[in-house]
Amino acid sequence: MEHQADTVIGVEVQVKGNLQNKGSILVNGNVEGEIKSDENVTVGETATVTGPIVAKSILISGKVNGTVEAAEKLEVDPTGLINGDIKTKILIVREGAVFNGNSSMGQSPKENVSVSMPIPEKEVKTAEVEQKEEIKGVAKSSFWDKNKK
Amino acid sequence: MYYYIFDIKRLRKKGQIDLIKNQLTSLGISGEYAYIAPNQSAEMLAENALNKGYTTIIAAGGDDLINSVANVLVGRREVLGVIPLSASEELTDLIGCKDWQSAIEVLRFRRIKEMHLGRISGSSHFLTNLYLDISSPIEVTIEFKDFILQAWAKNLIISNYHPEIQKKFVDYLDVAMESIKQKPTGIFKRISNIIKPSEQNLSDNISFVRAKSLRVFTKTAIPLVAGDKIIAKTPQLIESSDDKIRIVVAKNS
Image (cartoon, rainbow over all chains, first blue to last red):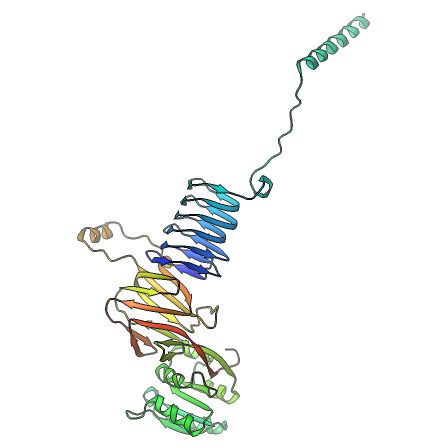
């Protein structure tokens, strides 16, 4: 995911301290500290973040050692790795991504956007009902057989 | 009303100064003319103009002259006018005039814009950009309010105004740095770089931060350049000035 960011940390750039921004943040380097934004945070493939990340939506393509909290959406790319707990409303983890931690997502399953297909309930038949149905079937066939003659 | 300070070293042709004066007269905006000399700096001439009661001081020259006059006028009601003579593209873009002829037309209409300046160590100011004067990559540490950034920098620009940077906050400086991978220290690292060249995307090497103030540190003192002039050396505190300057600009600026 490429987008214009208000703050950009380039590859091989070391940052120590807290990156706090009202705008979006793109990290391609190494950050030790907290990253906080009112908008998007992107951790690029070459990035390593050691510390918590808090933002509106977060895309992880690199390595994060710390908690990740997205108010709206958290995406983890195939190259992404999270060692820490996550909290988000919407979670997308792509094949190949690595996540080691606990996840917290909303209060009820309906609040999470995920695949949910309603499964039709199978009718549960008791043995007695099945026997009665079998008798009815036999009775019907013998009646016709008799009347055909 | 108008006080003109000329840097005649910036004139490209003989007789250009007469052409300028004739156009000023024809538009009814001529005034007193002064010239920078070894014993008369731009700041001295600007102070002289203020003492005489002039309300518009025009710097006719390059970025160094314009920054020097801006130094004196920042925080004041008096207005800075610009006639660019071999000035940078950033400066001509700021005032909205590519040449001296259109700049003189703009002076006549006197459309004034207020803007913050960049300030170095509380004293020198710059209107547009400050560059770290480096010919080869160096290790740079930049201290911002909440974090420290370290990298091997190939280019570093601290911008108060740049036509290619969208200014989000008028009282913030835009800091852009092009960095490289850390210099290899041993022979084996140098060999590995030849065998396995970096596949780094060049655009990933760019860092960009907006800040009200920053401190720049380097291992040895490196010049900081505004226009063509070295105005300071690292380490330095660089910040957006609290005071503003009033500057004449074109309609679309």
